Amino acid sequence: MIEGLAFIFSLVLTYYIAKIMKKAGIVGKDVHKPYEAYVAEMGGISLVFSIALFGAVVESSQQILLIFLLMGLVGVIDDLTNLPQSHKVLLSALATLPLLMCFRREYIIIGPLKLQAPFIVPVIFWLYTIGSANLVNMLAGFNGLEVGTSAIIFFFLYLLSGDKLALVAFFASLGFLVWNRYPARVFPGDTGTLSLGALMAMIAIDNGLEFPLAIMLFPHAIDFLLKMRVKFKGKKMGGARLREDGTLSPPPYLSFLGLIMRMKRVREWELVLYVWIIEVLLGFIALNLSA
Image (cartoon, rainbow, N blue to C red; front, side, top):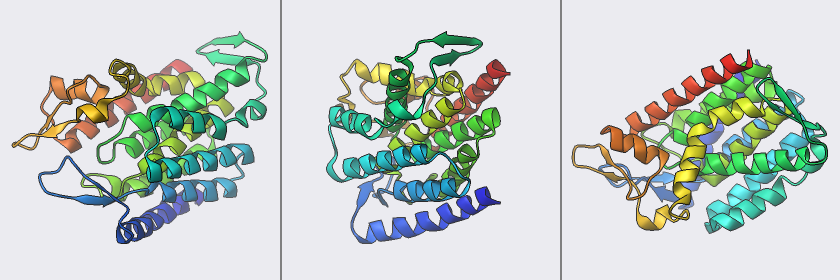
């Protein structure tokens, strides 16, 4: 019941946020369209609001919700100022600093193994959350990609743990996705991606699912490693371009999405669908390994 309300609330609030952002001129160009399109930015505010509100209703951890809100604030600052990647990571680190006190577990779970590492584990969980937030933030740029993959991950986290906050995040993401899917009417911005990435990490850690989440973030990690080769200067080098037949030509540097474009000619919605399918398969792998 509460989860269904989260969907409806997110659906309505996203429409409202998109409308006022567009009216205020806070828009971004949707570059992968054959026509000129400007889409409302910072729609992730509705995700942060919806998940925090209904997360509190299902009595989720106050510390997790606080850090989630702080990460949303970092995203707002980034959306408004276009922070350098290093500054984004630093602010993410500050926003997640309370994690050093929140999670008292002295071991890390990797499959059937429990690796004991007292005093070091909180730092590892802190870095894990920062990494998750920025990985979700980096695998982006196409209609429905970031929120769609996040929704899939939250769904599998719920199946693995029964965590109600994961289910709230799943339904809120679906409500947002109605307006964010191809052709998008709103973008999540870093407000949405950073906060969702941090939230999935905290839910995973809270339920001992850091290894299954790492499996589901495999595409994001591959994308990160490939972009390291160009020192994360891909935007300056230029991104994917639209061919005359409506398919995407890959960017001049390697990335996870670029690899798919190099293997097969795809339209934007097809590219996103392939990534969703990959994410679902990884979710089932995570389920099987955790059985």
